[in-house]
Image (cartoon, rainbow, N blue to C red; front, side, top):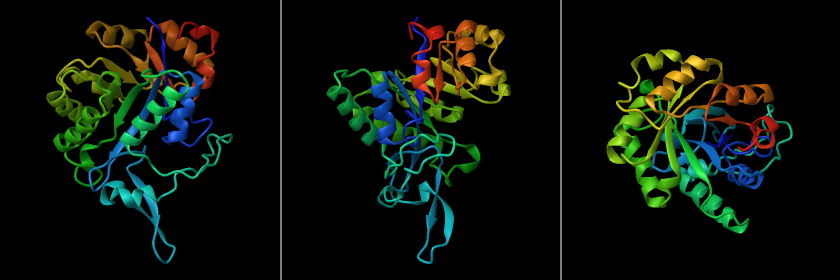
Length: 268
């Protein structure tokens, strides 16, 4: 099986994360899977953003942090998110607003047609959700899942979409609506696996753990359940090689431009 390399929030070494430019650059690099984050606006648009909030200035110039769920998308779209990150000093400064999920589908699919690779990209969508923030940062799990699944269904790209989350409630609710979609459980705390697969109530196609949790025993256990394992976030070449050697099915990285050309990952 091909070892999978996912571009984490797009090609972040080149453009600010979760922007259309970053996703299209990932396609240019040869990536076949992009990972991106989803939140919801007040008017129920599915917005691509890692953080559920933004810093907004008032008329007097004072800045405050506001949840995107408290703002209509028209207001969100006016907020620039193209500033260079100090973590990636070679990023190109751009003027960009947070796109909607439908914007990403449309732009990346159009770009793929232009470069002669139509219908190739897989979209790994992370739903950002926290039980303690229901009604504040996002809708209830059932409403949230319905909004996201509705967007996926409308896109016609369901056979190339995966839905992942740390919040098993989202996966449970989404599975009820669209049982044939590909799902992934993100794991940061190993205690989560103590109740797996009771939560989310089924074995998803993927269980995606944080790099520092992964060892042969974990991989053996998860593969025993029938789940594939894609590890996040893997940026050092020695860790990339180690994940493949241990038997992981792939990795999520900020540096696909390195991983795609690493000899140890040949055949990826």
